[in-house]
Amino acid sequence: MKLFDSFDLGGLELSSRVVMAPLTRRRATNNNVPVNIMAEYYGQRASAGLIIAEGTSPSSNGTGYCNMPALCNKEQMNAWRPITKTVHDNGGKIFLQVMHTGRVGHVNNLPAGANLFGPSAIAQLGEVATYHYGKQKYSVPVSMSLEDIDIAVKEFSTCAQLAIKAGFDGIEIHGAHGYLPNQFMNESSNIREDLYGGSRSNRLRFLYRIIDACINAIGEKKVGLRVSPFSYADVAENPIELRQLYLELISHLNSKNLAYLHLSHMGDAFTEKFTLWKEIREMYNGVLMLCGDFTKEKAEEAIQKREADLISFGRDFIANPDLVDRFKNNWKLMKRDKEFWYTNSSRGYTDYDKYQQ
Image (tube, rainbow, N blue to C red; front, side):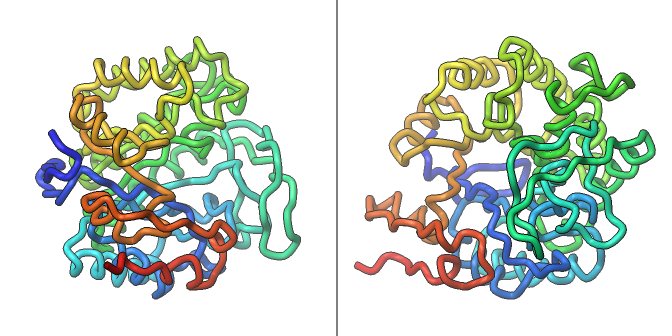
């Protein structure tokens, strides 16, 4: 097994095991519609074995960030089509990350009539940029009713169907980094006393329902899942309980046949992460993708040792649209300009050149 070997992802032939991780870039309109420059951006990076497009909301209630894209109506679906076509025309493959922000956001960023939802009425700590009022404290979310939960599950499955119609090869459920499914999983953000709170199985129930709904909508080999054990979203969690939660999740996932499981921020910098990564690799019987703190050399080592099947790179792809070629040829990597990560400009987005010999 080598990093630049092709890989069969459930019948989808990837040119290498190098994946472009989902990267929030916030170039969509204020109505959460993708724009033309996004086709150029993703097309430039089509040499990745697989692109996972940025977090995209399945619901008007899930657009907590300014200018994040959504996919919950025909206009948004049609706007995504040129993007997927450009990637495919350049020989690439592309999944869509389906991301509901839940309590991570501000009501000012939502369309009129939408609600900022969470499992419980507990606000995220910190501040978030808003359209009209600069940075504001995160809004206190509305605790979701059972009906709200049913609707949200349906929104995920509808988004999955729209993604396939828009030309995506599959979808990735974002169950990581403190967004809505992760909010249900964590005791610090979920104090419910019904079927969706309390025990580990109850706190995982919302995610399980989303997974099943998406599988039923588009098929298991078109559905991936991203989780992030011991990430910054878990700082208030009991580490022993958290480890057991993820092992219970992996046991459940073994009864599915997902496209892949994507472990985010799983470099070797923290003992808890490193140990759990090894446990999950031993336990999980499906395709495992790792992301976080990987250099080319560390990625090659992880693949050769069969510690992972795929490695995703995020920020290196920002300034290096030809990252795979740079890795293959040991060419120098360009430095990314953080000032333009979240603007509506082409600067720092599509103006990074490919390597010139």
